[in-house]
Image 1 (tube, rainbow over the protein chains, first blue to last red):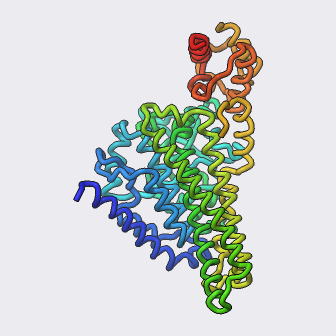
Image 2 (cartoon, helix red, strand yellow):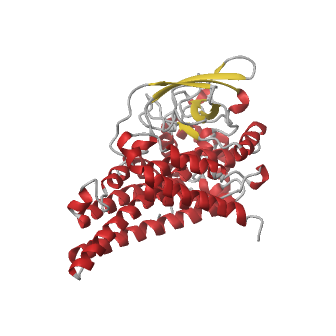
Image 3 (cartoon, one colour):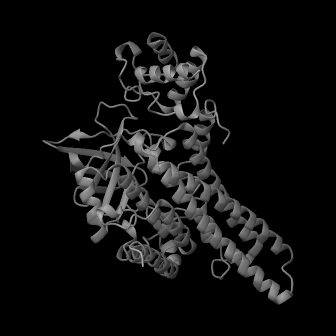
Length: 390
Length: 80
């Protein structure tokens, strides 16, 4: 047995078990727009939340690709569970890749291996027009080695359930909107004042209402790398890769439900007929998305190994990762819609084994999470100067 | 070369401050250059210096200051 075989299989086991538990509660989570606490407890207890923590800090050093695969698996049974898990891992990946050499963060990450913590992010802000690369609120000195902030965020996913928050802020109150830093605050170091209700079309279990976030932390809890650098090299690509992987899982589930319908029809009538063609078209779309994600993950892992990660900070890298996000977030609802056409009224009803309503509603959030419109507009200007054909 | 870079920064980067108030090593992003402004700057520099920046030079770090732009342009002309 190799030294790494055990922890890796533990991660896979936790994800497999969480998938089963998430399936039991997925309809209730969706109906009540409540946090998928049961599945997250399995992931927490199984050590999956600290999967990315490097071996040197006592973790298992799982890769972003390992986590992406887990997101696909979890999304088969509960999109909200997969999304909470993905968002947590995006923050963990950012810290592991950019802050692990700073004493405070090294200690924090190592501690999460034995006492797992769930981390959420506060990147949205009123007054920025949805641009994560700009902040209104800035850090304010609050004493020797102490800083404080107040930020109005229109959406903070599972903010009330998280143990830790990572918040984007201007470096100080006189800094330019794009001169941002990322600040970690632990429960007890921040207050959340709810700004409204949470009753969306889909992804209802992510519990993402708006909050006024007020925090006060020691200066050592400011990530020592400028936000634009860690956004380009980690937060943005990892977000799009993990989100894309979970949208793939949602679409695969819709496909499987449609396939069950077709199999039942074929067993009854001896022929799948038109529905079989629809299924075949969905398989083409799914295959294309899976291949795109695999290539993008392989490129990302390879570029991550290079010192300084030059391959991740170019405009062309940003453009390619934006394209993956647009592709996954448009393919997933298209496949869910096709599943609905294949399964007909049995798929439209919410009370059959062929129901795809939840998958369709959940998948529609993809185009809004960092609006595809914004990504197209970024890519359009990048394409003016980028030389390589995508 | 740096004076010519400054002229392009002034006309293309859409800074909220006058370029004269910045030193050659000052961070243009910290001075308020947006990503959209930086792409204008890249295009303006390609025109003014009659060069094409290869993809590996189209990064935030390269366009962060007059100094870093100047090094990239020197690197390009040395490679020709």
